[in-house]
Length: 360
Image 1 (cartoon, rainbow, N blue to C red):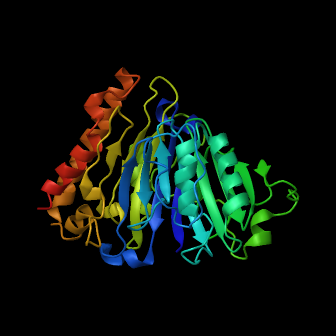
Image 2: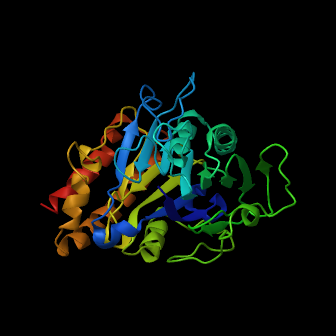
């Protein structure tokens, strides 16, 4: 199994409300035409986030304090995910994985496992980087190559690993696009495996097709002067312009650290951002998300995915209007509140079910 995603990071200096904004287009060749692999969105409370069997087969280590997690899965029946966020405003994403094919009885952790475990146990981005490094060093398959992005409201990191060695770079540029298709940490190494030669180019040493992060951008571009004007709606449009027929799903996280402590995570749950709408999730007291974003027994796709694939063209215009209204209403709410109350418990559920009404 491989995982590829085209990712965009805008640091707080360029974002509205001093928030960090992260965007991700998951890619899958089988998603052409909006029919192939179905992406799931699942919520886990502290009681079940570390329950079950990992995708790589390694046993889970006990954890005293788990966190609530919203997880996106690249295909049904996986334990882990390729993107997720936790209630402390930490986001972890796979941008690329390779060489993870292995036997079912393997004693390893896949990149998807590492995403879920790290989110369940990390209070901030730097701690998440350390946790990923420890999991890679102990449990990664010797043939595996993985590339992660880790963010919280104040910082973003890239972490690349090959086998059981890894290197991480803290992002300093105001905005950056991290392409899929290879390792991306090169010669700037701020954290790494013990004994790693930090003078060498990590990506080039371990991956012949390494791709460095680039300045290329799509859609509305962050202001280079740091005027703090970039918004989550701008990121929606960036992902729409960057997406294509092979885009499996897209998501945007607005990680807030000033004024409001409420971070918001937006999911399409459907292929091709240019043909989809984003639905919001926040860590309210008792979140409930729609079963329409999960693959039910004996099904191959989520019901949201299936209905979206058979939609009428006119539905998209109406849904985009609802999306814009939702953004405005939530921004107003966040400007007045410093926590998510129980009135937002069913936010994602309500938005998914409102979308489906346009497809039936």
